[in-house]
Image 1 (cartoon, one colour):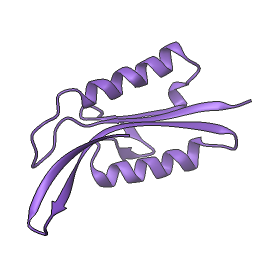
Image 2: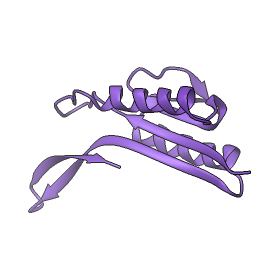
Image 3: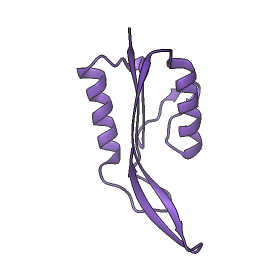
Length: 110
């Protein structure tokens, strides 16, 4: 039988950029919906947001670049199995370099 897993990432606050308004809320609402209204289990679901402060796999869950990469790798190694479906939702801000001198923020919804 197929199992469904999800990773939801929503980051509003960045160190050097203007904050986003709804990324965190959108990720939390989607995560809550998938866990409460569908057959996603809390053990098979990962939420990373500005307010996530617990430890998962003995790692902090605050969504820094390093934490996100480590947690996704550990989550996939420990939770995904054959015939699992992985749903990913992410609203993040990235910096795009233009003409080698200008940094342009760009919001991505994945």
